[in-house]
Length: 352
Image: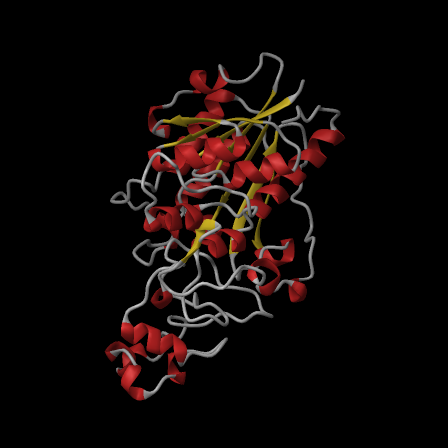
């Protein structure tokens, strides 16, 4: 009974790529964003189903699996409702249309009857009613679950990112593998240090994804006065933002920062290409991270292609794709955890 995986909320394929790298067979991805389709299919050779999860029924997914397959269903629902300040922990936010997507995943688990499931999100999700309802779905369907908050550098991901990860199986106990790396040996330089230098607003002629956003005159001055690991407090008074001159702005020290070669990088968000939105200044060059650098810090392989040749490349779209993705290495960690469990129970991986 070879194992086959369907990936819900697949985006551009960070989780799918990691599962493939772990030796698993992903047969389909589902997502609502048409701008993700080229990147997902081109890099992973897996069919992308452009559908709203709310409109997908279990029969549609079941039909994708081989008749004798061990069904695995993974789904990383959008994290925005649980990570934004407007969300009140423990209460359902009826105004956020993405809030109940985790329960849509739960509905499909009950309709598809997979053997193994997995999900990933921000740590705050475990404090919510929607997660408690999801866990009840798993329990009443016979799943044994392991879930925890992991610190990404412990698994070789160069970001100060903490993520909530869950794996579940009806076969018996399943475990997320223990840390694979020494967090003190994870450095930004090892991931982006060998890329060719480029200036703000320029791109590498040999890699169109190695492209940096332009900077205004004042932001160029600001980054020229920024030091690795420092803050806007390193700038001359004349360059400081008005909000930082007020008492209420004194605590916002993480914006307009430069990264440090020999440290872990910041969490890559959808705005990593903008110098002013976090500690996204290049350690040496006077610019923000390029799109390629953001992808590498998200542990995408250096050959991963995000630019659809049939459509104009929109920098903000690609940055959103990269920032929203599950880090590929985290997907591989989830995949290895699943592989270990399958092998314990004598189930074929299915190949890819």
